[in-house]
Image 1 (cartoon, helix red, strand yellow):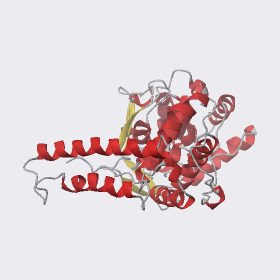
Image 2 (cartoon, helix red, strand yellow):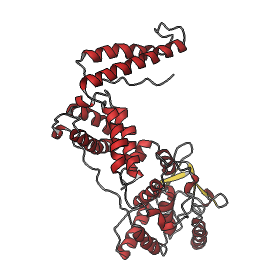
Image 3 (cartoon, one colour):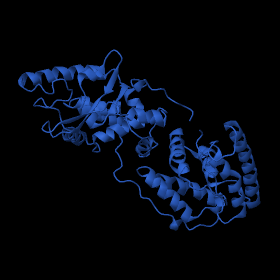
Image 4 (cartoon, one colour):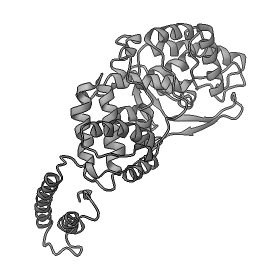
Length: 391
């Protein structure tokens, strides 16, 4: 059964709206024939529904003409994105992010799609409240986009005078991630290569793994022939190996296999040799011998240890301080600059919801398209995911 279409609303006290409701709503309610419908077959119900939609569009066109208003609110957002933003955009990334916000956050939460000229602060506040409840910081992203879109509508006389101060403001999320320029990234990696935690840093920056995913890795998770890594477990709690808890990811979206750069495998071999020396010094420490990230006592490292290593590197190089999550953001930015789709990025990062990916990606600035040049072509086949261009 097809998903029920949202019935556009125009003005609740308008007689035309009441007439349109009578045209469309009964068929929406009775499209599933056999349940108080009166239709003898699905085909008959579908045909009746399609006739109703044609009649509805005719009535809608008449209403737009009578009101001298070419758009509903939803239609205007599409127009603003495709005709206004496309002309002044400085890159496809900007347009794609705006498209995500409109299609995934705003439009699904228009309880009533009214004529643009009927938009009020109360209406917008209800929309923004629904967007905020839908995903993390959804209110902020919707607010920021609608502010620009409606400003353009006001300048072009599509929107009557409105007190924008009555629209609830959603502040920018705190703690923006740190991003390095290509030159800064080269400096960072040169210094990191002398660290005992270089492989962990590479796994975050070039594979987008979280600290928990990295700390839970075993040698058997790597496939040198296929050049892949499989994320099968996560270290959920670890205080320098004292309270290490490992959680299996089987059956979850975090349990995924990713294509990885070939330059990680020599580093993996080096790590294996280092860990063998550690285990030789601590012959009784066999519990974690198959794991990748061992500390000086042959126990799994902690996320605090990785953070301290990054602090040392950035202090020595004079770079802005960052954390392991910032490296994951840089990886995601590279994917976006290479025009991977939102669905693909979500799968690569192991997010359980695309709204999480949307919130994640909207904290990434749409600048510096050369960030991927740091590793030249080595990440071009990254993750083996098909790129979707021309969005």
